[in-house]
Amino acid sequence: MTDVLTAAQRQLNMSRIRWRDTKPEMLVRQGLHARGMRYRLHDRKLPGRPDLVFPRYGAVVFVHGCFWHAHGCALSKVPATRRDFWKQKLEGNAARDRNAVAALRADGWRVLVIWECALRGPARWAEIEVLNMASSWIRHASPGPLEIAGKNARRTDRDNE
Ligand SMILES: [Zn+2]
Image (cartoon, rainbow, N blue to C red; front, side, top):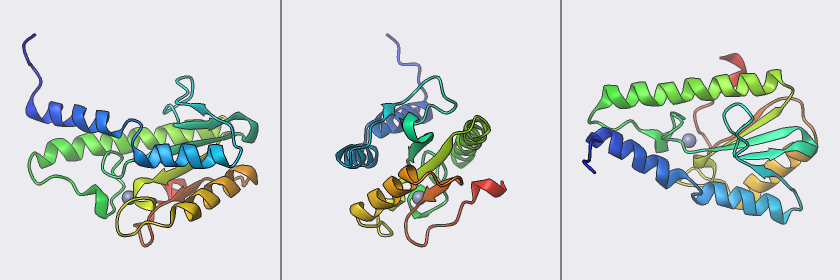
């Protein structure tokens, strides 16, 4: 087979592959499972294919890589080369995320986004703090959406977008 991927596409595919089942998502899965919470994974029938779905609590959870989902924090710097390509690509991803959250909420789902920087990098919380925040939000049926990001991360209030 001829390799027809451009370098940028290849890089994109690599980041996609690397992100699947990577540490933050596994950590969240294992931590919530250990707290007795049961979920479905990557439900294709739901907008945005949430990473974890908690039917009993009417809640879905996304664990987002900060680069890939254009968080705007220190972990999500756009590469200096092919800047326009990346900016367009990543902004497209962020727009898709916003649409998925809006569609989920319109269908009555509660949405939690856990950003990679909450669990990795200099601004991270202790794992147990993130898991406690997540499980209490899921269990207590708080109506509003929640984002858990690294300490001092740029606020991204998706409600107002
Ligand atoms: Zn981040």
